Image 1 (spheres, helix red, strand yellow):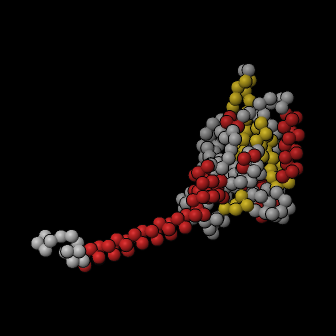
Image 2: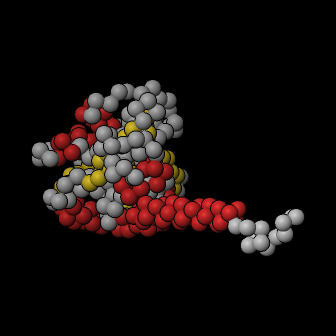
Image 3: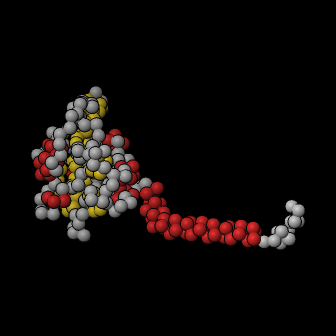
Length: 270
């Protein structure tokens, strides 16, 4: 794999202009969708097969002062991705830059990635029966360009670089803003081998509806590491046992019917 790349979202710099969402739609040729205000100025309630990123708005009041909390919603591109581990058709993989992508030639729209994603990100299109989400713009980054959302962000709330560069920058910036935002959190999900969209949040994760300590669900680990690898063997063994049992039963019945009444322990008059 080539050097792992990442994006940093700094919530303290975000102005919620939504340029990242527009750039994503433009670059990926995603159509506009009819929306309504869900709260304040937020126009999307959730991700869809045609909307891969948007900014959420949350108003918080502290000491009679209102503060906006903005959050960029999209795929986190986990180092250890539950969606990839749960996919039965190997349709989900990591690019050589570390971003998680879906191969739509292999995807059958089963929805396992939707159900098992740690952050509930992928969405299945009911018309195409394929799952969709942010791709990390592999055709851009493989040619030395920034992801479309990062390229368009004017206040530099989004920064792109190598994993080491981003984490060094994130830690430094986090220390700078803690005096102003004492509840700030550097959100990187170490149990998922890090997320390639790392966040500096101004409040605890639950305020943004994020899990505190995200990890691959245990059910996915059991399925991928135990049941699935040996599933074929187990099924074949069960079928073999059933077949052998059927043959033995048939043989016993045949012997029973072919035996003489005396052999069967019954009288001729029975």
